[in-house]
Image 1 (cartoon, one colour):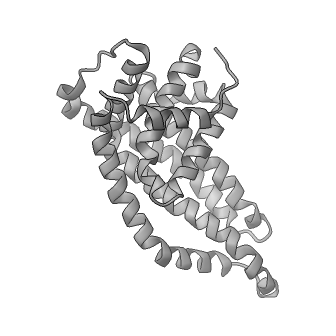
Image 2 (image 1 turned 135 degrees about the vertical axis):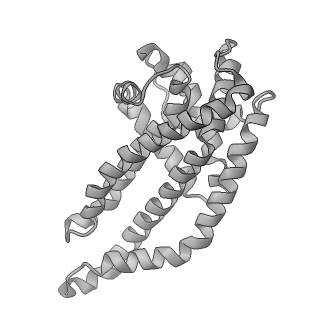
Image 3 (image 1 turned 90 degrees about the vertical axis):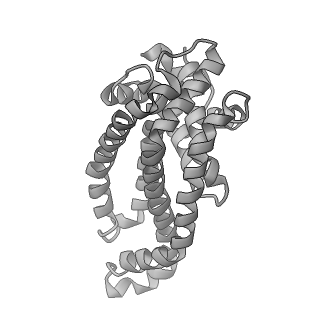
Length: 243
């Protein structure tokens, strides 16, 4: 049933849920992976961000040199979005089997009904299917990110490119985290996208909030487990009836 709750509401729910008894132990591995990956991202950010911005600005014609001071903050934001979103994809790829188990634990906490997926005993069996699902999402991302990346190279249009990229990233994160609870119910990638398209505002607000979390130092350590738990709460509260 549709409600007036936004994706941000469910992210706050995710923050509460990962602290609950019976769920905390499933947060440990995703949290550890997040700390390692985002620490690496923050260390390399200053070096690679300057290279990325200089590369983007180099495509401006010389007579638009005066725009460098105006466009630098815009491209800096784009650089942060690209770098942290890329690290978010890699982080989810590594932690995907554990995120599925976290989603299972959260749904059981919310509904009182267990999902017959086998728990820890089937972790080894689920590693390959989980990674395959992540690779499918990665291919979906790459096929759309390449033309969006070209927009950064087109003078005039490249001013709007960071905003388009932010919307695209929000959609991708809604897909990324919505996958975990929906995959637990054997919904395929194409079916997941159909369900999320039916609630676009909800999906974009959730993905946008998750994207913002990945860009805030220290908070980004919690972005993945919070988003997995929040997406599961959103599935139970909003999306399950659209299955």
